[in-house]
Image (cartoon, rainbow, N blue to C red; front, top):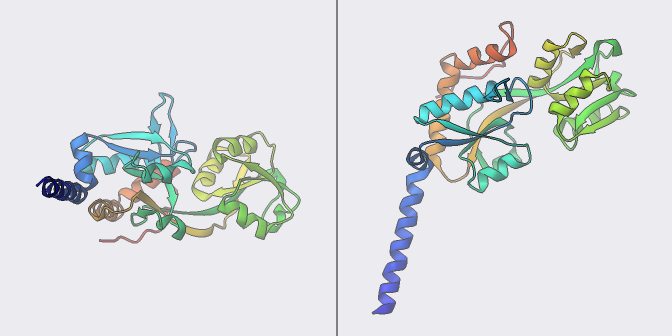
Length: 263
């Protein structure tokens, strides 16, 4: 009898776990009353803090709009490049809207929405350095994020450059450029285009290297949440909100990278 009761209890526990899994994170978010979203606040205009210490920026606007679609407020966590994926997988965050490039390696451990932005690598340089092409970086001091895709690209494209490494391009690499302690830098185009627009001593080279899609990341195993977020992004692009948000942060004359409407 006791064995049978234990079996019933075990079966009931399995059914409860299955029901909870089927309910998914959307129901958990609504029951909790807020959605936990990781954003990166290290660089304008994608994400930073304003004078009142409030999170603002392109990604923050996207995250707020997504939270509004869910019908709950957003609670933000400022996440580093290293921590954003692990915090999703450990359940500390529901979503990450933090300029995360969609790569095959990352897609093996988290789910991604369809792209809500795209980016590539760009070179920024002191106007006085007369840098007009990649080959001109050889012999110049170039700030680059340690172990990044920009680091690997520069090693192939300008191997004789003097590499000045930083673990955080924004703000550390930005400061080096502003203080003229380096001749150039290579990083995400969205950051460098904005930086050049705010500093008359700096200019970006016109070529963007690569065309990397940026997606909203979430833990694997919840198709309902993935479908919801994909629907949000499709509407964000198709409705014109994407173009409006891009111009808000990169300027009215900025040309938003093409994102095909989906859904």
